[in-house]
Amino acid sequence: RGFTSDRQLHEPILMLLTLSGTNCSAEYLEECTDWALDAKSDRFDSEINFATGSVGRNANSITAEICLHLAINPNTPEQNKRALIEKGYELASGSVELTRAKDNTRGMINAFFQTKPVYDALEELYIHLSDVRHSRRTSCGF
Image 1 (cartoon, one colour):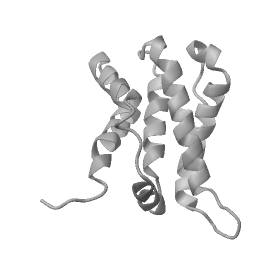
Image 2: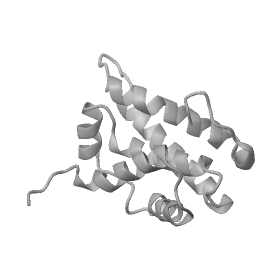
Image 3: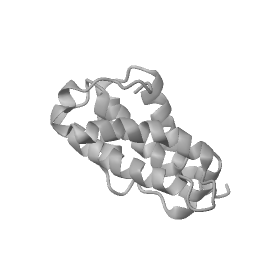
Image 4: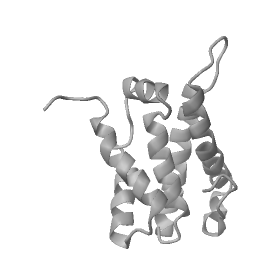
């Protein structure tokens, strides 16, 4: 077996696809929440963020979107929602900064446009952290 730098993204991508498209069991939500809040499993180095950003989605934005899905899921325990919003917002902020156009560069256009709605939704939740329990899905589908 060879080594590929994106192997570490396999589980997060499957997790995001599952959270995006199905009703998950309480056990699976807990597993995802534990992963998302674990400091060791969600931060990707700059090499993988640049590599994945160049093809349309940087790695940290995947974790940010997982945090968003978990934070807005009514079955996620309230005590985890604040931490998920804070972590997701931090990661999405970094992803938007990494991928946006700067000076004379175009940035990572596709990755930016994939990340910006996630950032916007997390920013709204972050601003209203005291109202997490009553948050509604935003117009971008989250």
